[in-house]
Image (cartoon, rainbow, N blue to C red; front, side, top):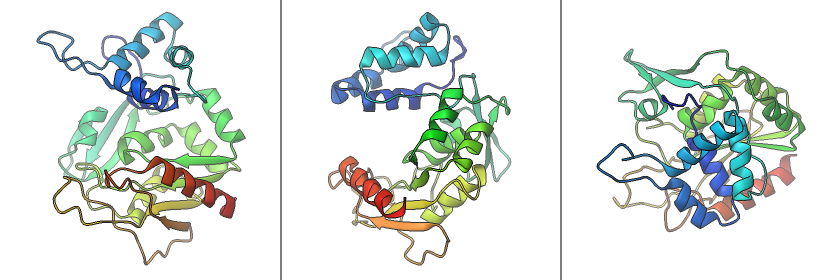
Length: 265
C-alpha cells in the first residue's frame, strides 16, 4: 500500500474470493502468503493481484472490476471509496493507532475510529447500488476494521440511512480479541448506529446457540441478549458452524436472513 498508494485490498479480496465460482480453490489462492527469507515474505498473493490490476486498469476500482472478470464472480464488488484511505483509532487510554492491523489488535478498548483523509468520496456505483437495493446486510465481519470503516465514508452512511431497503445488521458469533472483547449484541448495534445513524439498521440478527467450548477455542462467543429492550427488531437463531462454533454457518445464516426478510420487508 505504501509503495503503490492503493486503498486496503483485504476485504475486497475476501468478497471476490467468496463470489468466485471455484470458491475453495480461489480462496486458498487469494489468501496465500509467501514464506521466504526475502522481500516477499508475508506478502499476500490476492492483494498483489489486485494491486497489479489497479495499475493496469488505471485505478483501484478498475482493478477490482478486472479481478471480478478474471475470477468470473457471481455478483459485483464495489469499493466504498476509491481513495487511498487509512484507518486511525484512538483508545480510551489516549493511544493513537494508525492502520487497520494496529486498530484491530488495540491493547485497550477503542474509543473512536476515523479515516484519513476524513472527507473521502464514496464510489458513485456503491451509493447507487445501496439506493436500488431491496435488502442491505451489514456484516458479519470485524466491527471496527471491516464494517464501521464503510460508514466513515459520509456518503455511504447517508445512502444506507436514506435507503428504502430493509437493513439488517448481523452480529458476529464470537468476540474479536483486541477489538470487541466483552461487547454484547446491543453494544455492537450501538457502535454501528454511532457511526451510521439511528435509522441505518431495522433488524438485528444474533446467534442463540452458545455451546461450551471447553477451552477448544481461544475465542469467546457473544452471549445473546435475551432481555432485548431496543426498538429495533431482534432475531435470535442458531447460525453457528457446529465444527467451528466461533464462525457462522453460511447456509444457516443465509436461511435466517431470507426468513427475516420475508417477515420484516
